[in-house]
Image 1 (cartoon, rainbow, N blue to C red):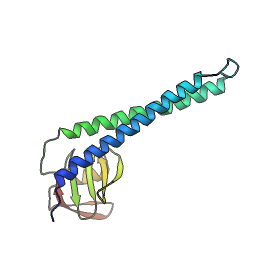
Image 2 (cartoon, one colour):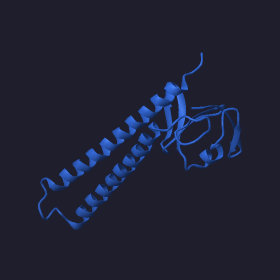
Image 3 (spheres, rainbow, N blue to C red):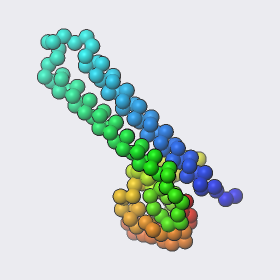
Image 4 (cartoon, one colour):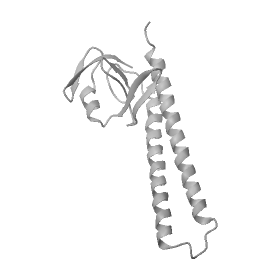
Length: 152
C-alpha cells in the first residue's frame, strides 16, 4: 500500500504547529504565574535585591521561550503556503532510505503514525547537502549516504 505523503505532510505540519502553540501557552502562563507570585503577599522587606533579581531572571527566561516559540510558529505558518516542487527546499517532506525529514524549523525528532520525522530548518548542514535534489538522487552527510525516495 502506498503512503499518501501529502496527507502525512499536512498532518505533520498541523501537529508541529499544535505542539508549538502548546509550548507558547505554557511559557506565557508561566510568565503570568511568575509575575503574580512575585507581587502577591510580599512585604517591602521581602522584596530583596536577590529576590527581585531571581524573579527578573525567571521572567527573562520565560520571555525568551515565548519569543522562540513565536519564531518557530511563524516559520511553520510560512510552510503552509509553500508551493509543491519536485526538488528539496523549504517546506519539503523528504523521504529517504535512512530517515524522513521535514524542512521547516529546527524542532528535532517528531514521531507520528509510528514513523519518525526529523523537523529541520533550511539552515542545518544536512539540508545544505540535500537542497535542490530530487527523488532518486543521493546525498551524503557525516559519512552516511542517503537515497531520496520522495520529495513532497
